[in-house]
Image 1 (cartoon, rainbow, N blue to C red):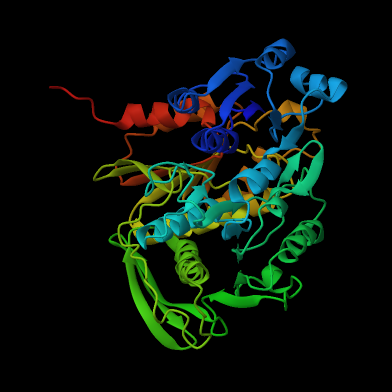
Image 2 (image 1 turned 135 degrees about the vertical axis):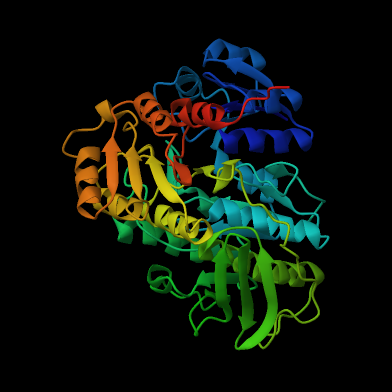
Length: 484
């Protein structure tokens, strides 16, 4: 089959295209300005990439099927061609994944506002480690797996990040509705994606729809500490387990401790100790991600081997993964520079809760450092004022806050746009230092001017984008040059 991807340059689109290529299909795609590493990854996979959206290019390639990316909308020349001529059948990417990659395989879907990519990566790593040869699709760059995509062995489990964002301009259902979960992880639930959801009730409704498609022989693992998850409708047709720090959880995280040497905690099943964890990944939030992955790996084994799960101790008789060497996912508290008196970290966090969790972890690990937090409001929700005060309060955990340019701020009405100067005023009122910048390059120049402070400093960049290249420029500036 010949499959053409419109908007192939996105991480999810590119990885899915590579998986179809591994299945033996002929693949091509179009996009604007695709650059390394994705351009190189596609080329190395033997996938033909066309610059721009010329309808004649797609028509001449003559696909059997067209995949329309989530970032593509009406007005795109190739989209208008397939809608006008009906010459080629078209699908959204999530529908393609469900129909062509997951099919009848036992699928582990990781959903939630935070931690999806990391938990997906940890789960795929765990299943690989215990010998199940899973397929997977990770929405990031995992540091513990060969790549972000793998087809896996025939009939093996498939692990995928369940995004709640809509599927395509013609399919406004959440992506995860297409993913056929046999095991569903519900990490947490908060309001997000204000561009497509009205409020928390609206986004919760989409999660309740996801619960309805878990089969009777499936499992739901829910965060038992999250009231929004607990408030979702029950799924009495399948087996539900709770995971968290509270005493009522089936799998409980206890005795959590974090310092410069790493993180330690213990996992208990209904009061009985199962194991101790000693690893390098930061934060209590990652301890929960691991616990979800840990339990799901046992349930997946049971499904694949046709064994019964004992509620009294589901871990009995199964292989248990070892996470001690795990590094997680690129740009999740990724250490870019680590000198005696100077550290630079990049983090993907773009929601107040995620930023607060990261800064609390950094405080525990680098207790004697001055923390400078740089934040680029970039996501469709972060550029609005929905979370303006919450962002300011979360960032105030740092000693100094630098706010970059609002991404495409001129496209957002002033009444709805995040006000970075008002955030700085709030941050200063809390006793912290702060400054806002209209250009990210000005923020970078300011950082360089402060680099000679006579104290240990940790600088963390929060952005789900590139920060206009200022992260890389700052790293180059502070990294000692090779004088050999």
